[in-house]
Length: 150
Image: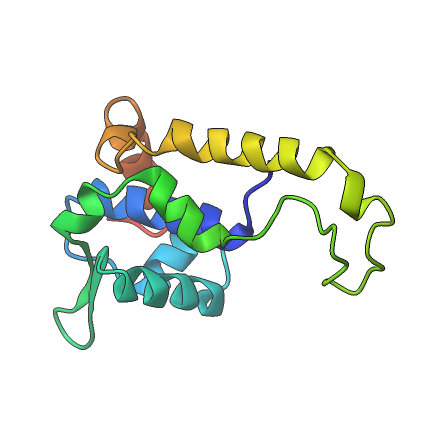
């Protein structure tokens, strides 16, 4: 299973904020550190804020901080939220393709759905705080201090 770019970015933002030992970074700074377009980062941060995982304050002294809910959030729940409830394959033809002629009698769709649920179930017990323990946390800090300085 391949994650959407927004899911990947959401996890990386949460991880970055979980190890933030500096002043709260701005969305722009996080986007630069992760080499992603600001607009994409802003959309992801807005969704994380809506979910209560990130606190975003504007203006002088503002920036992004991880909430306690964000620190203890299940990685599986975050991935589910950003990936949506869709199937791994488009058997119905909703994305501009014709519906699959095997749709009514195919066992593949069910097998893929079970595999997708097993993937999520493996991530459910893992928290954001757990995925930034050493050596990940120190590596993230090194990246965030990269060419932009501390």
